[in-house]
Image (cartoon, rainbow, N blue to C red; front, side, top):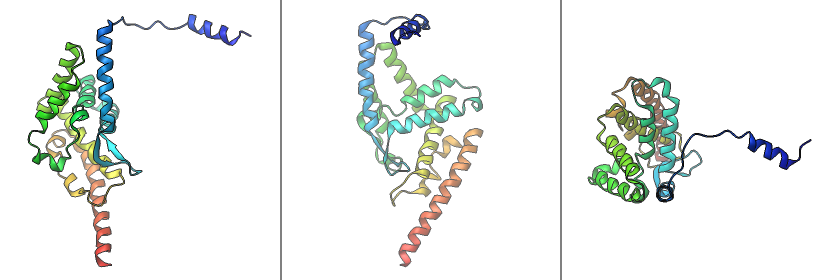
Length: 221
């Protein structure tokens, strides 16, 4: 029987050659610097809680939108699937520097979009020019919400937020009724999103009813 070393050498000799090419050091370092800075998004907290009561991060939220898009791939017709995923990954990336503004407070922060784009540009400063331009182009497309891909990501962004509110261990002040109106202008414009929305809204109503029953019991005590 070959020794452990022999087995390793045999496996190496049969290694699959992967396609691709090298990269100059400056480009690699720029990308790695950006990835290091993007880690900040893991620490940005949102007004949503997990089922265990841990406050959700923006990175958590972005990841699950991507997972949802992956599950819907066969049902999303006539769109650029790769672009959907890219847009979902970067749509909240500017929050890595400026933090999250909860949806109910968005009207009190009229410059939110401009500040978030400025933060995103700062975050991307180390990237090679082509990658920096691509990230900003995707973010601008998302904010304008004029393409099918952008509108779908907008709608799924709202749905994932509501789904997390429905399954999370939330504080008493969370407003489920707000969620019944949240993002309707994006989710009502697409048959698939409307179907998902109907199910999500049913969960929201059940949570709202349970919350009212609980508060009613407390008031009568």
